[in-house]
Image 1 (tube, rainbow, N blue to C red):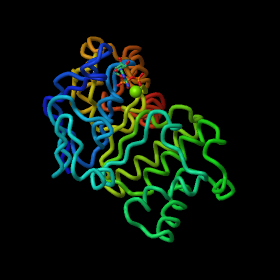
Image 2: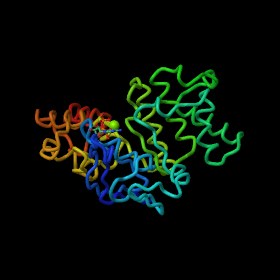
Image 3: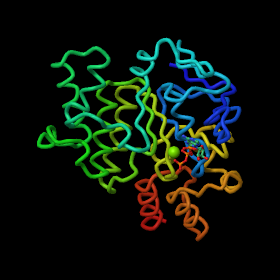
Length: 285
Ligand SMILES: Nc1ncnc2c1ncn2[C@@H]1O[C@H](COP(=O)(O)OP(=O)(O)OP(=O)(O)O)[C@@H](O)[C@H]1O
Ligand SMILES: [Mg+2]
């Protein structure tokens, strides 16, 4: 299940007066069956990068390899349908993803498009809608009548209904309330653990990166400037500072407590672990 970017560049509006190079010489290999977070400032090229994975955007230079499928510059890949069945992409803006008359039909579109019968597609769509917390009462409503957060849930259901082996999520929890965010992140984690789905997660939330990701890719002005496991990044204060990133809250809190003289292990990465360690230290100190 290999995913490789080789010398990938992307220029929007190539050969026009408005051309803009959004990606430059990206070389990257994504670890299969893991969760890789893609972070970086607004406009750094995250969405541009991930839209190459299902050939929604084509490289203007270089190539992207997804297993046995190679996407070369400026050429529509031959096995586009098979590629899109394998790689599910949840767009940054859900409106762009929803188009059917009803929610149920919208979520059934993927499975039907990839060859499932009406009956099978209905079952898969209902399962996916249940997973994202959309109840039956909504099935016949138009997706356009939904709130932002509900639209996002339906868009996510529409992608996971086809059970892709690579799931690309472009800021999937933007617009969800805190409870919805937690539930959705837990769903992605479950898909990763139970179905071994490879997940690419574009996010601005460092706490999510620490909690859910295995690896981190940092983009800056169209270039990939860092790629490693999350601990190598978050335990290197100098590097975080150099990359202009904020420290996740749990690590900041842990280190502040250590500085105050509370003896804590440096291997604490979740709020639960932190609370437990502080409790032990205070009661048994
Ligand atoms: N369709 C387009 N035409 C021209 N330029 C574009 C287009 N889409 C994006 N860009 C430009 O390419 C650059 C990278 O955009 P991209 O959407 O990949 O950034 P991003 O890292 O996803 O940002 P954000 O965090 O705001 O979502 C930006 O400067 C943007 O203005
Ligand atoms: Mg984006």
